[in-house]
Length: 273
Image 1 (tube, helix red, strand yellow):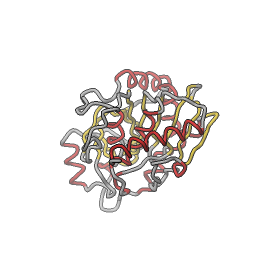
Image 2 (cartoon, rainbow, N blue to C red):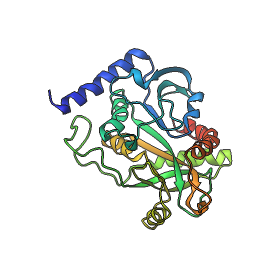
Image 3 (cartoon, rainbow, N blue to C red):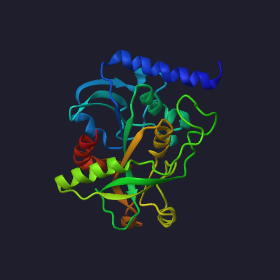
Image 4 (cartoon, rainbow, N blue to C red):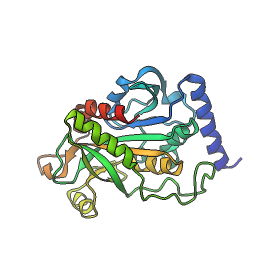
């Protein structure tokens, strides 16, 4: 049996295991990034399955990532939420990073909501802002490199309109009801785990980026390959304009800033499911 067939079999094994562990059959998946796992507390009738109990799932080692797959209802709608993700910087291959998305696809998920904590490069942004992702720029290896998984999607997926305009409009409408102003912008993905240098911030900004982080884009590419509808949101947890010799990026600060924005993001995601 070749590696390709083993990978496809592993997707099937993971999906079978999950179908045996829950009666929930959601069409919406959610990926919760650093400090944003709090949204999981709003999921009712929850079936919580640790990643360690799912075939093919790796362990999430990043700060603020609990490592659970949660099936339940959000705002009355069946959902499945990843309480923590896998990152390339953790030493995982891209096929491991996007494996959960492919399992969600096998479970029948058609819509994917992704969130992350990001550094703000747009000078108009402030810590705590929520930015709807309108597009992305990637400095990561593409997860579709290698033999194409023809059962999942085409060899050359189109990437011109990755982030759903209709879901973005719904988010803005709900934000207006809450009295919240949402930002929009381009998310830049780089490998990490080092935070960006001031020169890198300037370069990414010149290229058209508004926020930068170490995740999300591989999952989005895999979801796009599978034909999912995608919505992405970044919590701005630190800003390039605030950095100086006596003010450095800190992982714990990122989690704390994301946690403060989690309640608002939860209300927005409730409107999208």
